[in-house]
Image (cartoon, rainbow, N blue to C red; front, top):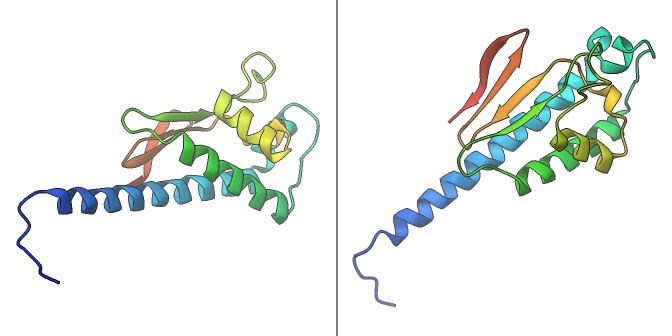
Length: 144
């Protein structure tokens, strides 16, 4: 086998692809863990509670299923540029506004009620970062 000097940037393109894929998987992991934590610990900020229906408790099996469905869905729809926005309204406006279509699809595939989601949460997933907004304050929870 004879090795020659690299004369093109194909090697760099492969390297960039590996970095990009690693960043994508890290972003998906952080985003899914964030939503699972928010769902599990919503308490009085859970949509069901705010709607006057009491708290919905989810088992670890249901949370794991949500995480798996969430990760698969975001992986398929991962933005190359721009962002994916996931959001929920508060309980006061849930019947008129609800949630975004991504979360509706994820919850339907997970066989979970939309009302077990936390209220008034917004997440923007960009190709290299995740920004969340709560109480009109934005914070970056992941950045490459």
